[in-house]
Image (cartoon, rainbow, N blue to C red; front, side):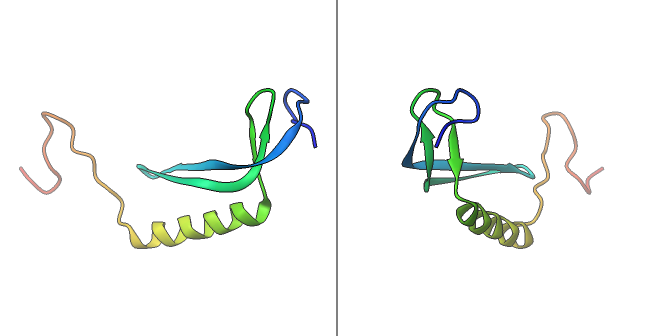
Length: 79
């Protein structure tokens, strides 16, 4: 297989998968995938991505949205 960006050779590797969503970051350190030996681009198997996205949906349903307090501002519900 070849990289879509640089046409370098892809090799099997365990690579990190990162999700940034709704004020949080989720990092899965070791996901089976492919790594370009030339430019370092990563590719993932569809089944692995589906499992991670399923876990993200569960987290989103269980973790309330966080409110951000800015210095000098008032907390919600205060006068």
